[in-house]
Image: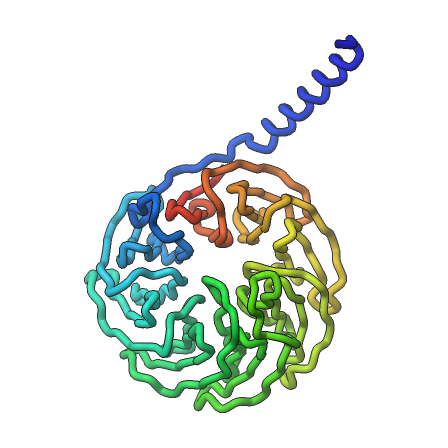
Length: 362
C-alpha cells in the first residue's frame, strides 16, 4: 500500500477513535431490567415508564405493573388483567392510572399493592391518562375521550369519528384551564369543554386520514403541546402545525414527521424526526434555530436531563446534545428504541422493543 495513503488512513482512524472516546466518556448504563421476562417470540414492548418520587413505574407484556427503585431493585409487582403497552399517570397520592391492551383502565394503589377500581373503555388507550384536578382524562384508540372522577365513575365521554389505519401507540390529550385539546387518529384536532365534554371547535388536519398502507399513513403519535396562545400538533409522516387555541385556525406549519413528543424549554421547541434529525425551532413562527442530523434511522426524543437534550434512534444509539445542538456524548444499547427517553432524578430511562429498561447517566 502507498505509504501516504496508509498514513492518511491511520490518521483518520485515530481521529475517529478519539472522537468516539470523547463522546462515550462517562456515559454508561447503570442497570438494565427485562421488565416482563419477554421471550424471543413475544410481542414487542412499547410501554413507557413514569417516575414518581423515587419510584419508577412501568407495565409490560406479563400483565403486571412493575415498580423499581432508582438502583433497579424491583420493589413491587402488581397483577393486572391483560398486557399493557401505554403510558402511566403517576398521581401525588401514590396511585398509578393506566390502561391495558383490552381497554380496561385501572387505578392502582402502589402503597397497598392493590387495584382500587377498573373502568372498561371503548378500546385500548395507546397514550397515557392525564390529570384534571382530582379527575382523569383518557383518550382511546377509537377516538373516544373520557373524564372519570377519582373513584372511577364516568363524568362524560366524547366520541369522535373512527379513523383508518393506525399505529401501536398514539397521542394523549392536553388540558389548559377548562379546555381539553386532543388530536384524533382520523386527522381531527378538537377542543372540548372540560366540564361537560361539549365540542368547542374541530379542525380536520389530514386530507386523507384513511390510509390503507403504512407508506400513506398520517398518524398522530406525539402529544400536542401548548405554547403561548398556540397548540402545537404533529403527525407521523405528516406536518408540524401551530393552531390558534381559541379557534383552531392554522398559524404556521412545517413539513416534519414526528414520532415522539416535542419539548418546550425556555421558549424553544425541541424535537426529533423520523428522518433522523434533531431540531430547535421558535414556536412563535416555526423558524428553525438549528438542525443536527443524528442518524439514518428514525429518532425519538428529546428528554431534558442534566441540561442536555437526550435522543435515541431505532439502531439503539443514544445521543446527548447541548441545547445549542452540539452532540456531546453517545452510546449504544442492544435492540431498537421506539419510545422517547424519560427523564428521572438519577438519569435517563430507555425502554427498547425487547422489553429491557435501562437507566443511563454520566
